[in-house]
Image (cartoon, rainbow, N blue to C red; front, side, top):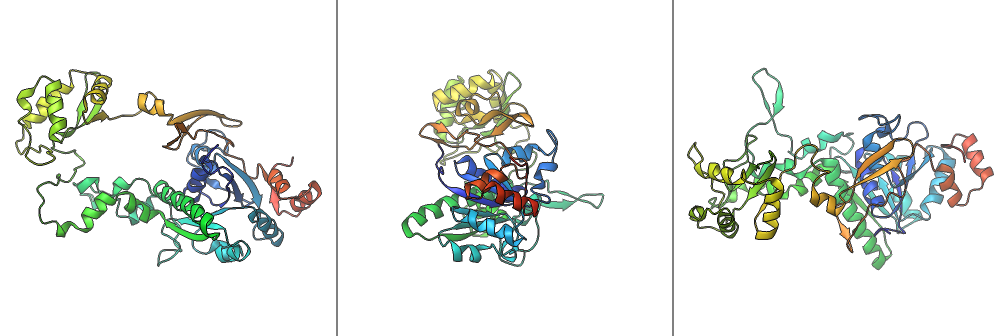
Length: 419
């Protein structure tokens, strides 16, 4: 049973933004009903690779724990069905740009007039207000608008990704826009549901993926926005270059089994623990006087970094991680390709779950990164559906009989496999 068990969500979305928000709510236990156009539906099913026809990996991941009804909202009968669905809904997820739902007659104001307690969350690339609101967006557009994809001109006269240093890894550290925004949107939906318990009133939530990237990268953004106000820069690390940092104590190192760790013993206590464990007490004095020391050397030979590398290469990645856990060392694994599934920490916490989709077959899902009372939400109550797969089931739940459903199907108002 998830934290949102008993909450019913209606989702009108396609592609990553609204789909991802609905997925988070579904993974938390909500009953998510995906309302799709009978004529095309969510075409995320049909690109970015195919496991089987109409089953892309993205669709299988982000549309799991949802049921699909193929319903024509442009049709008056279709809107009548929508209002019956809304009568028992708690949340409406709008993944469409600007006022698309309002033009169909089912936007927030129309919904609020019938159901004041509805929590309506519109999640788009640039937000539902402002001069960019009507621009349709795809993935990198949101990160670009957040200042997360810096570019420069190359010698051939083409634009390429910026290859210079950035403080705190830049706003790109905020992650991929659609996922960042969905997390903030889900947080606000949950908070709105809690507030509704107190007031009885719903609300309208407007989330922009581009702004979510900035909020997620608040460290880099804050320092970028306030750079000219910093009077004492001595405790700041140097900007991170694509070629890596010159810091000896905040650095990637190779282990004896040709794997990698990220070494972050920048506090004196961590550094002293490492030196004693390595039988290199002679290096303890290689520490600054401040609360942290990145040990950035100006010498080209980087003597301290070479000494640490020699030590790290004496043990395997697993041995270093075990020692870090036992001896209070800020050292962790730097996982590379194909190492996620074998990592003991991710395995112990259930970060992934293997399932079998009835059409696509075996598939590995990414789960939510939280345990509630020691248990992770790994239930796959519904596989990612085909277009309109649960149309009859959902219509039956709102009181329509087989004759009424057949009439709607005959009129082209609904679609999906008949049951």
